[in-house]
Length: 385
Image (cartoon, rainbow, N blue to C red; front, side, top):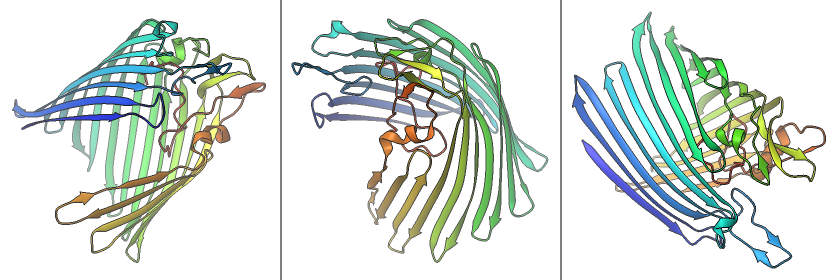
């Protein structure tokens, strides 16, 4: 079987410098082969958009100069996956081009160009062992970037991983895992995980704990402009996250709640002496985030689903409301979302070094378990995000 899809989005924006024009195409095919199945996928994207106050602020000088930034991106991706029983082997690649100009009316004033390539392969096998399921495998990834700002860089990373899960009695379920990563620049890291759940009538209780790490990006390490400077001496971020909660049905309504905590060390963000640019990437130390997540869902006979989900943490509250109504011939899923205090969640929960100010990140998506995504210092350097 095979299918092809495409799409186009275009807008003049809500103000100057916020327009965009995007084209996308995607193709997928499934082919029987060697007793199994081969999956082929490919996609392309072409996008141009006004980057007003997006990567860097637009400035007005002496009331006479107002300029707008613009960005052009193209991306191609592809993958091939072979599956046969419990065996899966996959290869994939992504190529990305990016151009950013700070002044659309005068591109030569500041012009960033980046070309990146990511290629990798992974393989894993699933086996029934000792009454449970075992999955073991590995991954290899090459990352490279050619940039008039970051220079020509490349690095390799690989990992081995394993996961084992099984039922304990009629109600308990246990899942444990271990991932060992090796990064060409940052060495070895081990990331264990453990989760357990127990059924309680129509509901369940659960607990999970896991360790993770993140290597600095090309942008955080090498990027430089008058307002932002990378740091070649950055170390990797590390974190432990814990969560416990339960779900249950009460009078036809599904209620879910969870308490979570995340402890990070060597957090990476941009800092500077108060009022003195540039912003510089740095490892800021430790941070702890504690939050509560609540969710309620109900379904009526008319097939109308109403749910409410809230998350409250050190970064501020966030609320999602989902309403879905479906009939015999249609399935309409309108969305409404609010996120109170979205633009300043980071300031409430992250440390501030003595004598330094802290950039406030725009958390463009709700993040339940991790620190909101930091503002990209690179003017258009998306290749390593």
